[in-house]
Image (cartoon, rainbow, N blue to C red):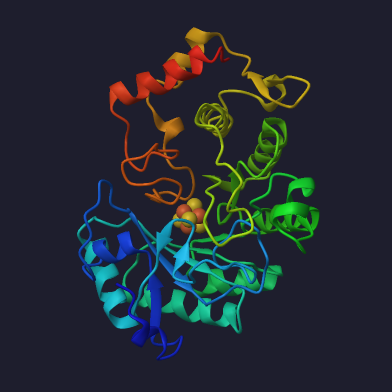
Length: 334
Ligand code: SF4
């Protein structure tokens, strides 16, 4: 599947494409239960950073063809652009998203890539990238990005010290607030549940990010062989469901962060709702779907095909939603 001949021709001629996206673009054939509604593209090779959960990190022994669980074969830019334009015109894609590693000239390369996609069709473009200044954000937006995402990943400085060595977490958070104030509606971040944080750390961080107008994509930690966190367990699924429910209710303004209740260990024990209210508010199933930019469903980032779906990449069936709400109530939640 990996077309190393293309990768070796140089960064300007080939981009990596998540294998599911490549199938939507007509570049390869893959059997999928759920198709991506965003074209996920990767720029750059091994990242200069040392995030302990990431396959692309400097210290990772995992294949550089992976990001999380997903394989990213390289294809020629021209065929990718044609595929995006056709799939967007046919309504198969709602967004394109560049995941950019910290590698030589990465801001300039991202700008060029965003310009190329913008010239091909009017699809909304996200870029997940380690920006260092508002001027860099400005450059990416001016190139045609609709959304710039700086991944915080860790929910607190304590967790960042373990999982993202070298990141000044508080500074990154303040930078996000400043960027969201300058470019409202255009700035986002990612948080990962399961890096060792408490529910209280994660939801307090999330609520502050929402209060500052940020879009937040929530991931479940996924252990990948070859990374330093390969043997760390993924989050318990019921815990993740409770976090998803709280995230969605916070995002919709249906609960207030001050109403959330925690035990002494920082574990979420209540949403300030009755069981009936919770079941009614969650009945649409949106809470358990992938969270992030509009049109982003990220199938199989956190889950194996046929395995437990941490983030549903599609609408839930009434039966699935009843099962998820039932599991939360059975746990004694809220
Ligand atoms: S939420 Fe999805 S589309 Fe938005 S930056 Fe993250 S991965 Fe990309």
